Image (cartoon, rainbow, N blue to C red):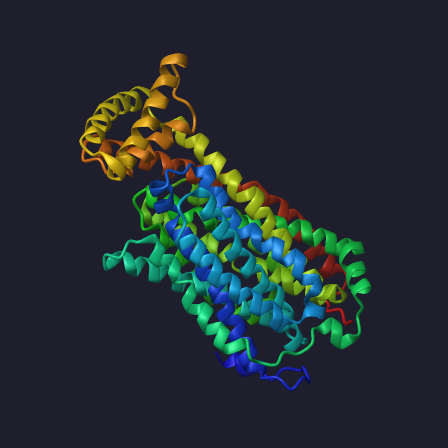
Length: 495
């Protein structure tokens, strides 16, 4: 971490090293939240009998709330100050974690994920302009090193969640409580410190000039569109990796840890790459590698094949987010905190509102298509009788899960009798209800044996649907890189 000691150019009487370190820890809180919510998605699906689409909305809320808070607070960063935004973030991380931990169903899980996500957005709204303000001559490199701690935090959170499983602590509530540890730490490091003014304030850029630079510059509009795509490629599949691979019998959280560990290492070494290639060259190469990695991963196969594909994918997406921010800060500096915030807003809103739920719907469709009809019907008939019998012997609240599962199974069987087809979505949900019912019948193991491979297949196919987006980026960033080389190379604009 010797980079933390780099002398900043900012003249404010502030402790730049502590501010940078605290910003990194705050980003760890956001990424631990990302990792732990991802790690418990499979458990939530079973315990609350959620569809992939509902899980996608919970995972999506943990993203698009980020966009909402960035949209609201990034333009106000110059006025309210970065410390104020971080104080709001600290409160949000605590409150959102508690709401999810005490959740009783889909709506409260969704609300808690949304509050946490808004806190995550406040961290980015404050810390991105903070890093730019204290390192104005090295923004792309320092933003990459700051963003080391998003994948780095996922590694820490993912390993902690996996470790809890290994020692027999499988409670998803305990895993979510991990978010509170880095939250306490960044509160101690940052909330009592003095902060510098943003670059815009230091340079006398007015709110109107900042809005004009953000919304009337063609290059900025192009980068906003590209941010929607780069975020979808990076965060959409990453959101689903644990649940999809776990359904196929792999320790999905460890694959997520591996992907993000590699991303963290590559981001920390970003200085060498940036100086050799330039941001547009990095982005073009990243799009190529991301597409190859996603396509390869979507084919499934052995653990070795999945890990090899995950390696290529990680190398592809590792530089996307911070390099996009660095490019905007260096090429369109008058957009200031608003420009950086809007980039994050567009990226997270697209993933949360479009990409994550869409991937869930794709997965649901392909899960249903690969379930064998007659074998599934036979299993459901068997399970219905076993659940009814056991529910009669288990009155009161103890038998509620059994009765819920029985109702789900009977609903599917009634639909099958009427149409001679298994209903899409409801069938997989009935199988999930059986596996989480607590029944001791043999049909529970049979349901899991049918559902696991189907869930794995549906999730992997959803990865394949993201690949064409990589092709779009290859064309856009490739053209920008060629034009840049013809005009004499990449250049940093000054305010």
